[in-house]
Length: 241
Image 1 (cartoon, rainbow, N blue to C red):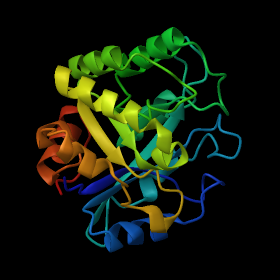
Image 2: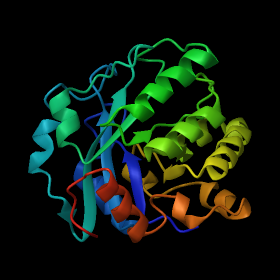
Image 3: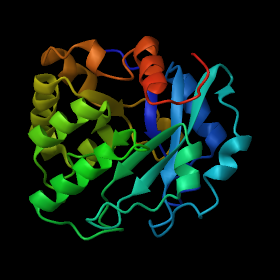
């Protein structure tokens, strides 16, 4: 399956990443992508963006060298009541919002707790994508989150960076994919790149989607048409690619 946009990347704003925004966009160009989302971590991550970073992204053009640039953020879920570390102003401004569990920002809960807070995120009106739900520290019920994602029109991530860190988690990816296909839930294939040379690197995930005969319509960044439709349905005012 062809992937035309990388919808989860980090710049030097997240200090454990290593490239500037301009370098990340250039990386998207090298990978022949049509778009990239710049989604630095929210302020609950120890070395992440400060609280005014996200609304200041209005200065970033939405098209750079013919590459669409989504001004995004990766919100940290900071408690099991569903609190996140991005403000309402951030959420109202951003072109793409990912919500994720990270053990830097919250202690891993039970599978029931993780599933419940993921469901809250999927029902949050401003969250677009659930970040790396296959991460081993945060077990959850994939069937439940796929069903809720289908109900709400949100996307679930298939994250190559997380797979490279935990290659033995591949069965989790397969199970999540099966659940998404069963319920008609959307998926997002991402690099979670922390350096420009990783942009557009999706590991074995596109091939896995083909092997599992996943319909292209379920992958939001499998075509320009899919991505434009997803952004429109999410109410995002983004230039048509």
